[in-house]
Length: 225
Image 1 (cartoon, helix red, strand yellow):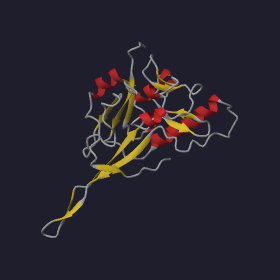
Image 2 (cartoon, rainbow, N blue to C red):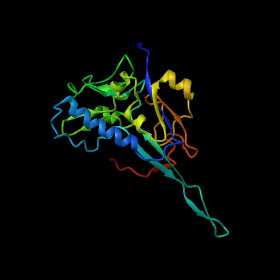
Image 3 (cartoon, rainbow, N blue to C red):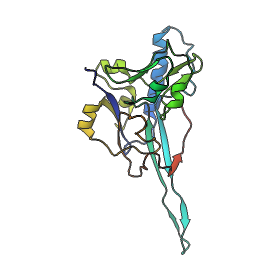
Image 4 (spheres, rainbow, N blue to C red):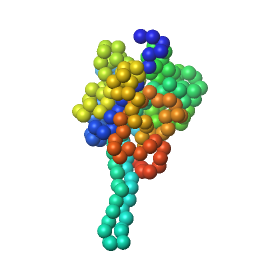
């Protein structure tokens, strides 16, 4: 592995059914990691309220109109989008961190947070357009997707990828992802413009996909697990 290695995600939004298996499996791993890194016998784990590293959003919009003949016509659309940390090439969370706790690893390009020097100021969270860094209010430290780096070292995929029943997610080096999927269809709403952070993310767009930042619809299920 060289310094130029960069891992990233592929999302096929034509396959995503909004089941949230990726969302739930990621949440389970968060609790397991806290237990393994503290006292394995301690069951009094933080509740991690509001901490969801991978989220599945339903995005939709459109309207109904009545024609001159009294018939209704519509242009309603809806689709699902799985969103997590994109381990960006220009991570604004790293730039915003005052202590250096938020950092980009040279060996694989994954963005991690060193919780031992994190002061919980949430500057990274305010800067990130993907809502990737999230505060654990019980422990008063920032948390985020770490790319399941320990699984990658074993030659496995992240839990979100392996748990997806429709195989809508993939994770690999960006070189391998581009060789397998090409450059994709561009980013779609509700994602922001990729020009902000240069995210390492390739998307196959749903047929109803609206351009990122278009404002043609809204998130229909903002609640989290």
